[in-house]
Amino acid sequence: MSEFTEIEIKKWMGEALKEAKKASALNEVPIGAVVVKDNKIIGRGYNQRETSQRATTHAEMIAIEEANKTLGNWRLEDCHLFVTLEPCVMCSGAIVLARLKSVYYGPKDPKGGAVRTLMHVLEDERLNHQCEVHSGVMEEECRTLLTSFFKELRDRKKKKKERLAAPKDKG
Image 1 (cartoon, rainbow, N blue to C red):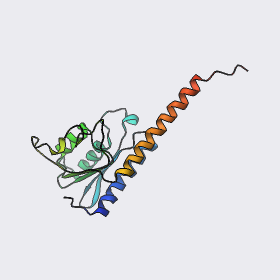
Image 2 (image 1 turned 60 degrees about the horizontal axis):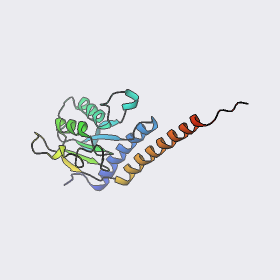
Image 3 (image 1 turned 45 degrees about the vertical axis):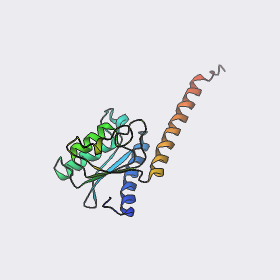
Image 4 (image 1 turned 135 degrees about the vertical axis):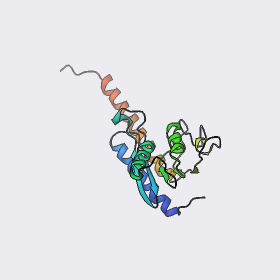
């Protein structure tokens, strides 16, 4: 059961969507995340893998690191992560290690989701910490941002390919 009202959940996921839009503006996969404690954002992040050329710069990892710095503590007990896509195995591992209390995410990730799709990392009782999971939060808004991004990316690649294949004007 969530300790947030529906209005608060939408507010925090809206903040994660703002972060995702920052990623999109940089031609990064538009995923955003925020960490909330005591009704305040203590960490923000958006995907930066292409910009940083580092595999670990996922939105969740950046938001968790910022929250650690804000609190001066690696433990994020009583903190909540809001993220626009189901976390991957790396981010799910970081969530467990940081001891986050709960995770709220938008759509499932059929190719990389490690919360409830491909794996169940956050609720695995064999691990030393489990996390409350709330899926499908603002799912349509999150999905639309992602599908629009990938459609535009495909369109750009197609146009580039057509330009390269077009015969050169000899005149």
